[in-house]
Image (cartoon, rainbow, N blue to C red; front, top):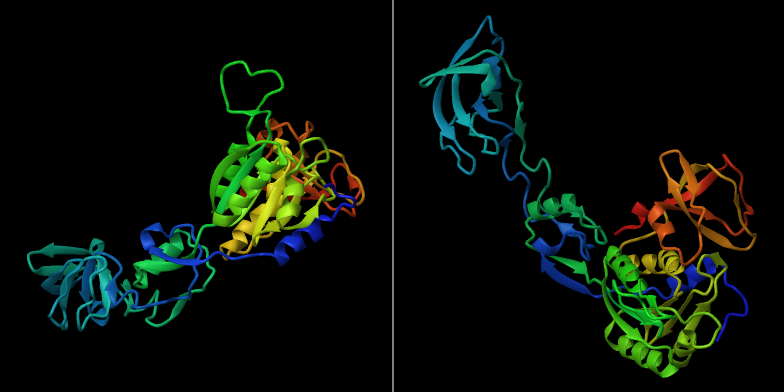
Length: 405
């Protein structure tokens, strides 16, 4: 099986999008909800804060009674109670009275402001103040942050630490989220061996794809398990068929081009449906995708850099959106420091080093040179309708950091 006509990148992405699936929903402890995606709207069970509270340590009093107080014209008050955090006072503040109050404690009846203790001196129950406050000063009013019954977060919101605090304040100890997709990564190739410090046998190569692709899957919020299949049709078929029963997504590396032993697309064609095979991109032209038992199958190159680029072009968006989180390339503009040739009709993802103003493509760009990805921090993207860029042209750049979950 081999592509006779290359698909455009945009059409390949559309074919994947047309077959987008979303994972099931699960309810988990809020302790485990960081960096998950909400599968429900969050409606507040409580006001936050639940009462008017002091925004700092000081003295709760009647603001109007402080008017005119200064270093040269201090005023005298009497302390009638003290409130610690988590406590309250049953007393009502009257004229020229004050209650010692801690940050977060409820404002006592009668008081309408808090004066910072830095502007006071104390002698027993006698309080001398040297500054004035206005009504409401240094008070966090009830429901300032959250109002009971209010929708405070929408379904499909990505839960960062900020959202986690808001959800907790709203009264949730569990939350409904999209399940993490389970990905089966099938590494094909009889020539592959595990990393070793020992000399490697002739015609063998260390299997690096299992580490890079697994990490990229996990960087996309999903779970990845690995198996190694040989190069025969039956071995690959058994692995793909078994994975399609228990996993949400299948990914393979190797066996996608036209050569002896490259059987992955034949397996997908035999078990299900091929969406595309061969895309007008560089690197990674032999990329493919298909459906087996309703599960998406991504077929990546055995070449390490090509496989990583193919993952970023096709699989990352699919995994994000399986979990209810939208994903698109975040394009920024940079000045190219070198001339970059390209070919009409092909989209190039070129490894580059970018800063806040400029981008310089990595010169050693072979699809098997892993170090070029280490040296880079971004892709320069050249559209299929462009023939490249001249030095000092503005180019489209995607920073690697913007691809992370």
